[in-house]
Length: 317
Image 1: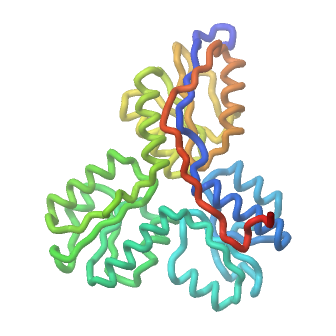
Image 2: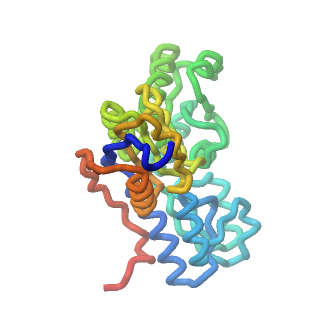
Image 3: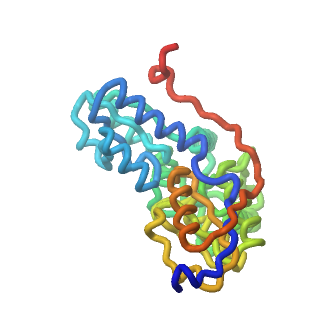
């Protein structure tokens, strides 16, 4: 499809979209630590899952590592927004590292749940994606007695020590609908399983998925701005597809393919919780160049959540 042949007329922007409070806080912690202590600053795992953000912080002096042995003794280490295991915290103390914790407070809430359940002798079932750093960090809050399920099939095959002494937690960035189905299967199999007092899936994940569902009612195509390793961004694409709308996940405007727009009259754009608005703006401008004549902002929930940085990194007034 050539640009001049484009039938694209409207672009609808989802609200809310992009950065959440936990991501804002994590990035600010890294930037303030660099400003206060100078480069390099070491970060355990990518602080958030977005290539643009990570590359920008690398340019400012952040070094992203997976193995604590790569951090010189006594240097500054920051835990990513996804959280870390108790073993990582112990190892950091042994290496006498200056540590700042950028774990999202909503992830820390899930960590506290795991610790509390295990102290009460409950076995914990975690709903999440194997290998994701948030899952590894959460499961690392207990040395034993925590099991991972990714699907209803996993629930069917699950073997527990005592069906009457169970609790479950979830990864904060899951598909709300998919997680609900797994929870339903767990409760059906284990009627006495303890449920979280408040849902573990975070407000930002819920809000962005709801916004995509609204977008899908009006659009022929949905573009999600976010990196391929971002769980919440992938879930947004899946939510759109579940609603019967073609959807693509892109890092930036260069990833847009003109053939996606063939026959499209309304395209929706959203962004994962780790994707900055600057990337959305660039995607909008690219779509304008391909024939978009009208850009409409969808109304949505106004997010007012703010998570504060550690006191030692706060700017002096």
